[in-house]
Length: 117
Image (tube, rainbow, N blue to C red; front, side, top):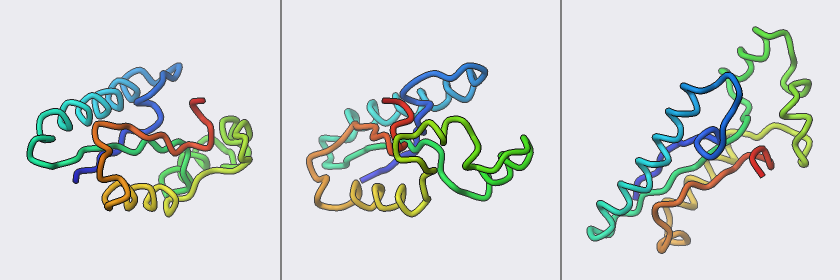
């Protein structure tokens, strides 16, 4: 089983983020194409597409623009009212790598607190 990281940008578009969004769409396409290419060898390929997640990088980005993560618009707009945690994304990756996802391949799964719905 292979797992890739597409980000929510791989499932939608963002103003001002053309290059980043294009790169994440490429990961989504790679995931689907690789799944077709190696499925006959019983290899599964899926991707997670996280939205905003608390990490040292997002903390630094928020500091650069002078906001706390909770004050960032997309986070405030989440129906869950919070930013995601890295552990939550990791748990999805573990699920995809295990037997519970044994018939799942070529799928990009958003884990984004409703960012793209």
